Image (cartoon, rainbow, N blue to C red):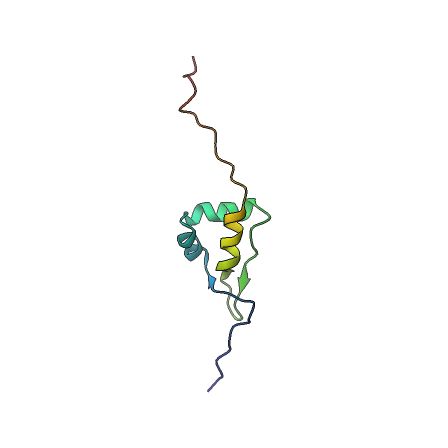
Amino acid sequence: MPEKKEPEPSEGELVNLSQLAAELGVSRQWLHALRLKDPGFPPSRRRPGSTREVWDLAEARAYYRARELRPGERTDLKPPAE
């Protein structure tokens, strides 16, 4: 019987993109766009023998809380264009 391998001490809970989006309260599509657009997004990891990308949940949460917010321009406060 193979021995069960314990996770590395520095490795936290690994989640896929859908799980990460649910944890952060955003859509998977928005998170994917953020991942492609922002070079500071945490790098993905792969479990041995898998092709699925996963992210360290603690690392992703820290990035998400610390990122610079850039809200869009409010259009409801502008007078209508003539």
